[in-house]
Image 1 (cartoon, chains in turn blue, cyan, yellow, brown):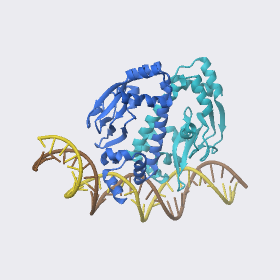
Image 2 (image 1 turned 90 degrees about the vertical axis):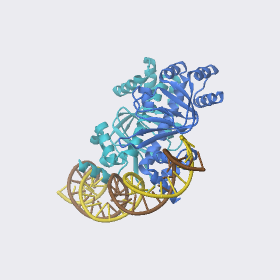
Image 3 (image 1 turned 180 degrees about the vertical axis):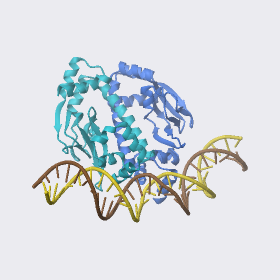
Image 4 (image 1 turned 30 degrees about the vertical axis):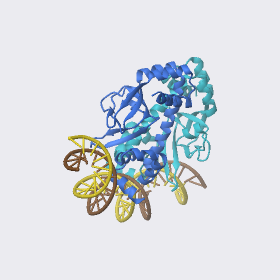
Length: 192
Length: 192
DNA sequence: TTACTCACTTGACCTATGTTAAGAAATTAT
DNA sequence: ATAATTTCTTAACATAGGTCAAGTGAGTAA
């Protein structure tokens, strides 16, 4: 557990300088949470009250459209953040599910505690500024790829960038994350 | 010009509290720039050395793929930011064009000056954190719409959310922004 | 005024991906 | 071990949107 916590601090320190005191304040602000495979962390209609740092395991977040299709928009594993930022920051009901795809360990912080923390340690604003800035740039790239590249290209890109996902996540979810049907993904994989 | 500058301060103050002194430091860090319709602000291979706040006018940023197709990924007008964030923050050559679609006024800040400013006025980190956080959430929504909604749905959404774009931007660019061909956009508009 | 370019439309045809349906393989529960 | 469920594949067919080609109109330049 201590090892997990250090991972969080390690990442914070990559983009913002923390004192030892800062570090212990941060660690005490996060609450360790365990969630079993297939259990749900967030569901539509509920407020997303926490922001989560994944220390081990893997999760997916998805939206279920009117036809009942699951639209997976995030697959997140160790050392990344997951939440419904819109619900978390604007206190509006979420439209999304977040579900664990493996037994998962998280460090959770509430919105209220997060706001306090950002005041106590203004340095953290920098960390999150850079985090969101990069997330935004990545999201724009994924957007462009979705608009302009073929499903095959997007499959190859994911295979190159996140090969681990293919070891740990069922193909039906990967298909949805790529914006295609499982049948299409099957065809693509057969061609190779 | 002074009116333009105040607009920038107004937006900064929405999410982070600035003193009068902060405000004058900020204003002196930004350089007013004018760019004529059809002129280019950034092109592939060049470093994107500045971040721009649009005070009047409208711009598009786009990538030209191997086939020569222009892939428009941003259309930005008054009171929003434009840049190639990847090039700007990581000092790598840009892959994108930024072009004015009307005579445009900008407030520009270099990366170096921006870093200084964020140190002088740590409060600004908060503004940009929230800016990128929101940009990221919006980008994810646009991504999902592109994956799962029809071209017609995306057209209607844009018509609802940014009707002004249709008054000021040629349809060929709007088509590209929606991820479709001008021919498809024509068909969609005919159906209504 | 005439020419030239750029924006936009239309129609015929094509292709990537979706849909439906069935079954095989793998995983999980009993 | 057996059954039940979930994941994955395959094939036939359907369709949204792309491609190509041609033409109209509107804006700008000479």
